[in-house]
Length: 67
Image 1 (spheres, rainbow, N blue to C red):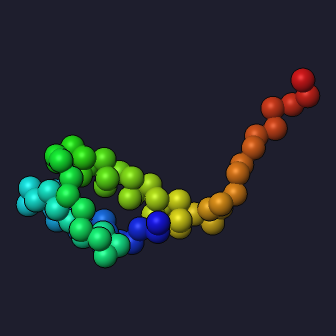
Image 2 (cartoon, one colour):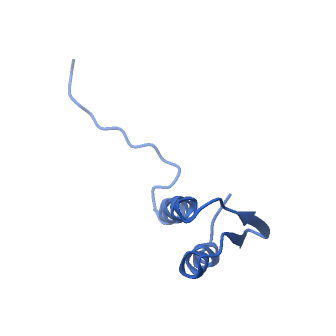
């Protein structure tokens, strides 16, 4: 699922108002607590950052020398 800035805005508005229900990607989601909303916010931010990365989808390995 690709998150959008609108999804993040919905989460932020819910956190600010204390509301536990938000609409994300056209679906109504009800969280159990503000803590869960904050976890969802962190997840959405990470997903958006990853999607914007020029290396999205690539694995990076570090050469640690000859063993």
